Image (tube, rainbow, N blue to C red; front, side, top):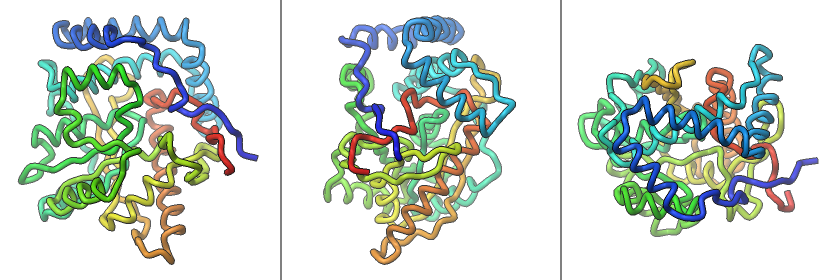
Length: 324
């Protein structure tokens, strides 16, 4: 029997005003990076002590992962610290801060990245699945700065939940309105937004979506998939959208190098999905489940490689209250 529980969208926003976020942006803008990272460490210690839920969810995830990776040490504080530091790095990418990630510190692995670059150079778009493991925003930063090794600018449309944290979103709109220019809310996908996706694809661009978060309006549309030895709910709509666009699908991950949370060296992985992409109604359900299974296996592999860079602080294996 599937377990029902609280999902990420049921969590209440911690900050009740914009002030904490404005202060965070100010610190990132004016403080040197080592001081920002020290403050992030202090904040993570505070949350470790006083935020029981975040601490317990980190422990839950690490205990589940340990069954697949027996050598893993249970270190929830390390996971919280990694998240706090990565948030600052994400904001750097969103706001074009004076402390950008040096591009020479970003290493692409020799996997399917060359195939993706070749495809983009031929003006053929792609659908990208990302996750809340590691830091995808490095890719957004690379695309905006035209540093992806592609001969021309890469159009990028990102599907996300822009209203997850209303005060944070308001602050980000005030500080970096450009962040929202090419962002579509996952709960606002209409024929008009589908046209936007197709336009991005036709210009040889990328449509990007996280595969490890459910929409708060999913209405029970989920795919139950084995993940780290337990059944977990994945977004049906995200994988359906990948099929409907009928373009090659890639999984992209960005990680801070192992054991170097206070450094600024990153590793990028590009994996092309091997699942047959077909939007035909006859094959659709099988394709969705196969693509979701491939994504879950890939996510699983990287969880084992970078165990403390998992930033889903809720019960990932709990199914939303529904008929499923």
